[in-house]
Amino acid sequence: MPDDKTRQRRQPPHPSDFPHHVVHTIRFRDLDPQSHVNNAVFVTFFEAGRVVLLRDPRYGMRVPGATYVQASITVDYLAELHWPGDVLIGTGVERLGRSSLVFSQGLFTGERCAALCRSTLVMVDAETRKPRPFPDDLAARIRAGAPAIPEVG
Picture 1 (cartoon, rainbow, N blue to C red):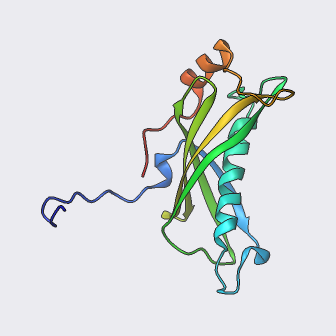
Picture 2: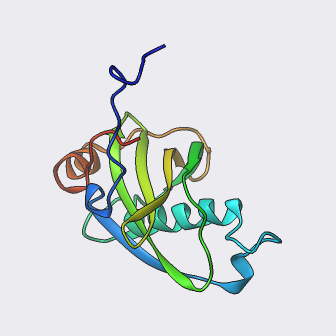
């Protein structure tokens, strides 16, 4: 186990670490009995960040006859969120696979990071529901123009 001298501290994530941003308002109904934003709502905020990026026409990530399904999601909760307020969801493409995208995301109130998320979405054929490779032109667009980030968290 590393001691304090050998342990390297990571800098806390900052909104500028993520190239695509969406702002959402915290609603009163997002609170749980502890009077903070329920942990499941964090996942909903992250979903909103991914969906806005996927639907952004600048990146052209929609493919006729295909859709995306969630394959995995991991959330690290770092701080509570409270109402009233707004959150900024930062999103970037961490990795592009044959038929999958790995997103890294941060959830911020001001510059304070409340949570980090890593999720994998798989492109599937809308009828067969089987994984479908990204068309070459889409893969090239994602590599060239999608908001890419290095691994976070």
